[in-house]
Structures are given as structure tokens and as C-alpha cells.
Length: 459
Ligand code: SF4
Image 1 (cartoon, rainbow, N blue to C red):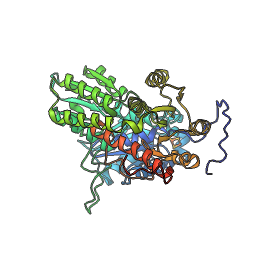
Image 2: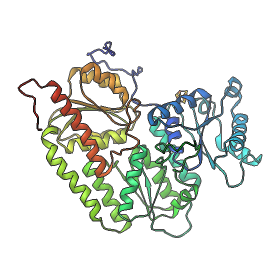
Image 3: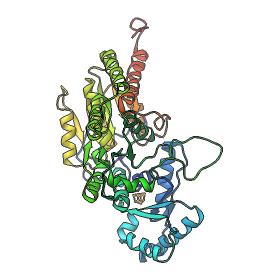
Image 4: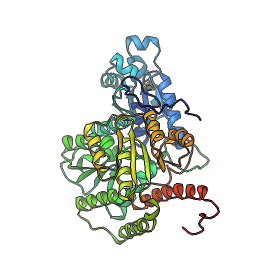
């Protein structure tokens, strides 16, 4: 038993977190920055943070993750990191030659109160930022929120620094995909493409963190939103932001700055989540839904009706990031499954918790919800009241093993399986894949537990 010290008795804890279900802001900021074409993320703090954040992203995506650091020493920690950042900007443009540097901060630079815009202005005044190159920044104090907050802040910074209105309205729709996989971003864009809608997606990590192996290392891969497109977002017809926690701030900022109207939706997971996305796209762009998309939807509906008998009534425990947890919960409830233990590590707020509780209001048994909660509590709930299935990231595998419950890996991080960066779980097609994973896990267990009499050939 790997987690044999997990007690079944649940005690109220106020100071102690055990096995958190989140990580710190800069990793999300780094991930968002990688979704800008030609961008080198820069961590303004001591170098341990950046080493950890790069390695966590590399372990998840199995891809090289480029970034730089101000590499604070004790001196900089006391007297401020201005000299480090100015030097870093100079070195980065001379050695790595990115188009843009995206600076985020760590606990250290936030605590000493470094004024990043002032430092960047000094670097510009000193001639360290070449013509046609850019530096932008987001403050990402790790003692506030989670990695999703960092993602949200860096995405908003793209608006704050670059979006501008040219006084006209293009037909383009801005898509803010949220903290999702590169494959999900590609799928969201593909759906809009099928509908014949021109879009600008930001950030966009597809073809950055799921690129091809060509035999030649490209430090700045082909994917990512360009600075030119980021500027154009201020003249788009509208913005669709997916996932409130990750995308709302940028969408609201764009509305305030350039008067681009926005709609905030949940992630397009499952039938209803995707319907809401497609319908909003349709209305905003003034188009009709093409047959090709109706076909995908119909196939999903057919499959739901075919597989419903195996999913009906199955009890599920879900842990992960807020936007994913909410969208997934809505989906599994729509399949007549029962999410009974739900934890997100991010402090997503009271309104979020209310939405989550509404999503499970028709589940015909009590549901445990904790926002924010940790994996110890999640495990205790499962120990006291076992489920048929766990859905969560790689850290949930210890609980799954100890309690002998099947696990479907979902969310961030997934360190021990492949596929997530290549096969989306969003849109109608993604919902099919997600259902296949849920069903495989349930039926594999059914086969494993069957005796000679109950073993079925046909299911
Ligand atoms: S919590 Fe602070 S010190 Fe730790 S990795 Fe994150 S930014 Fe760095």
C-alpha cells in the first residue's frame, strides 16, 4: 500500500495540505507563453523554479520546453533583480533570438516587489530590445491561486500588451481555449474551421508542444499565435472564452480595452458543452451549422445511446483543474453516471463551487465537493465510500492502485501515459474518445472480475 498512512477518519484541516491537487502560478504562465509564436518564456526569480516548471511541462508533453531565468542570487534577492533581468533580456535576444520574451515572476521577485514594467522600460531605454522584438509580462505570485491563475494572467497580458482596435470590425472571432491540451486547441480551431469561421486563437500551443520529429531541432516551432494576430484581436467581431477560471480575465480585458464583445462558456466537453460552443460560434459569426458537424454530433448521440447501459449509475470520483472538473462533471452527469467525490486544488471561488454543486444537483445520492481540496481528502472520501472509477491526473494512480479502482487519466499533469497532446477530448469527436476511455476502464474491470459463468463475449 503506497498510501497506507491515509487515515479513514477525516479531520478538519486549516493549515496542512497533503498531496495538493494543483501547482504554482508560473508553470501556467510558461505554458501560455509557449502558445505565442517565436516566444521565449522567462522566469524572473531564482533558477530552481524555472528548472522545475520546464521539467514538469517536458514530462507531461514529452517535448523540449524552452525558457530562461533571471537566476537570482542572494544579492538580487535583497537588493532587487533589475540588473539580472536587464542582462537576461540582452543575453536572450543575442543568443537565442526569439521574436518575443514573456516574463513571469516567482514568489521571490513578487515578495521583494520587483517592478517588472519599470525594468523592461529600462532595458528598452538601454537599447537591449532590438527593433521589431517585444517583451511583455505578467505578475504570477505563487502564493495566490494556482497554475491556472498563472495561465489566466499571462493570457490576459497578451491582451494588455498587444490587442489594439483599428476602428473597424473584422469578421474574425477570437477563441481563448483555456488551459487545455494542444490537441484540444487544434480541435476547437477545427470545429470553427468546419463552420467556415476565421478565428484567432490565443494562446495556441498546438504544433508547439505536439510538433513533429524532423531530425532538426527548432527552438521556436511553427505553431503559436503571432504578435500580428494578437494585435488584430482588438478588431475582431467577438470573443469566445472557454473555461471561466483560465479565460475570463483575458476576454473581459479585451472587451474593456477594445470593446470586443465576449461570451464566456464552459469547456466544450461532451454533447451539451460542445453544443453550447457550436451554437455560440454560429450566432456570433452569423453562419449555419454544416452537415459535417451535424454528422459528428449524430454519431456521438448514437454512441451515447448504445453505451448508456454500461455507464448508467456508475459512481465516479473526479479530481483536477476547475474548468476541466466542471465540464467533465456536467458530461458524466449527462451520461447518467454519478460523480460522488469531486476535488479541485485551485481556489476557484464560491461562484465556481455553486456551479459545480448545480451540476450535480440531480445526482440521486449525496455528493462530496471540496474547492479547494487536496488529494488526501479525495483519497479519504474514496476509502470511506468506494467508487467504480476515478478520473484524475497521474497523481491519482497511487489512490487507484491502493484502492483497486480503475483510473482514467485526465487533465494536467499526465506523466505516465501518451496520447493526450495528440488526441483531443473536446468537441463531439473528443467526447467519443473520452467515452471510449471511460467505457474501456469499466468493461476491462468487468472482464477482470468476471468468473467462468459471468464472462461475456458480447457486450
Ligand atoms: S512555489 Fe514559488 S518557489 Fe516554489 S516553484 Fe513556485 S514560484 Fe518557485
